[in-house]
Length: 158
Image (cartoon, rainbow, N blue to C red; front, side):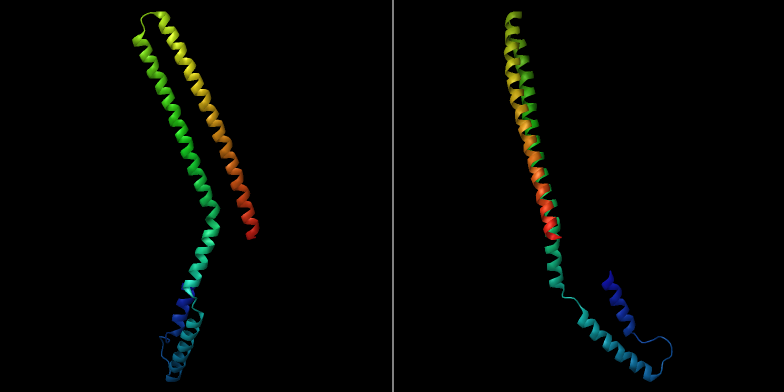
């Protein structure tokens, strides 16, 4: 925005005055305009160097945020996979119970079959809870590592 303002003021300075001017003034205005153009040409920034520096700065500035986004995406996927597996366990429990009821001849066989199904589900759910606990501790460790790296990078930049 500042560059645009400076550019507009230089153009206005190059334009001759709109009121009646003497020939000497108009000649002076044209030499002032030439000087302004020459000054403008010497003050023009090298856009390729400026844009490269800007993009390098942007990469360094947003590097911690992009690493955080990757961390969140990876952990979200891991959590979704664990939840999906847990949902599968519950579905299997339900189907096993329905099959046990439909195939039971008497109440004793149904009770023993239900006990087997419950024991197997308890083992599965215990294993899933251990997996979730391990995933949670891994997420906390990764987040702590990300925080430390981000703080170290900001200290180096300062």
